[in-house]
Amino acid sequence: MKYFVGVEIGVSQLDVGIVDKYGKLLNRDRKSHSGGRHYSEIINDVAEIIKILLDKEDIDVRDVKSIGIGCPGIPNDKEGVIVRNYTLNFKNTPLRAAMQKHFKLPVYVENNANCAALAESVAGAAEDIDHSVTIKIGTGIGGGIIINNMIYTGFNFAGAELGHMVIAFGGEKCTCGRRGCWEAYASVPALIKQTTDAAKQDPNSLIHSIVKGDLSKINEFTAFEARKLGDAAGKKVFDRYLEYLSEGLTNIINILMPEAIILGGPISKLGDGLLKPLKELVNEKVYAKEVVQPDFKTAEVSSAAVIIGAAMLGLFKDK
Image (cartoon, rainbow, N blue to C red; front, side, top):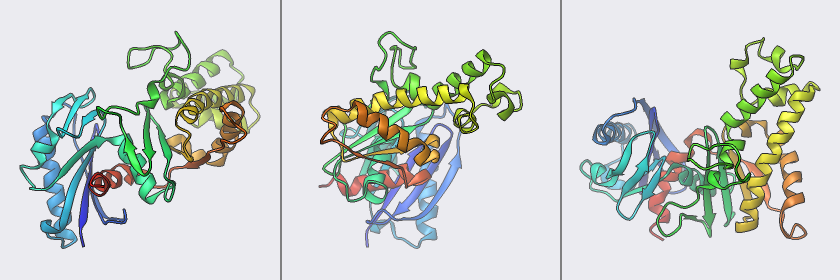
């Protein structure tokens, strides 16, 4: 039996897993690391973790078909490099060449959000669905597009930066430098800021009691909790947030017409409390709503999504 290795290079953590051809995670291990390290040091650590995992599973390296690396930033899988990543300070970083110094295997390099989308397509909420879009809402908004069970990234491997579509011309400043990006309105930091601003404007809001008077403790769930308690400020914030989220999703559906939208990230833990009102809003706005009603689901692969998707690159990119 052939096996696949998936690697996630994060800002502060390395995550490595051994996966079978069905997308089942057999074993994984993690290691913390600090920013600013040279890429060769990071790859050395990853290679050591891979060797330990193979030994634990009693798998000969000759039974490994490929290694996939998921990393934030702009990939170029043709060259096996990360063209640019600001958080890790990668610029034309040759991850494939560095990994192949340790293992004489095919090595694939892909954006982490695209890997997560592939994982959901292979072994998660979008299994048996040919066309899907996975959106991860976190510090930013990452997106992965699956068309005919394959990752779509454009001609230069840099496509699907869905968080940086503009939904409010001349609006809030985004980390990318533009104004009005979806990410600037619907990411977790954006929701926390919106909740904090609402609490400051309304001293009587239940938001204050939920965080015991310490507004620095506001998180992505605070407005939802206040809304459930009947708080007007919490309701206003969460309902407005749903509007922001629905604007971006409507654009995606109008352009791609996927069978399913998969939502991941911390906010997805709200489940139907998020999905049901969100779907109602989107269905009101979407083009050709009489015939277009994609399914809305929460992500199922969870914290292993990037390493599973990265591992599966070797299976799907050979097609």
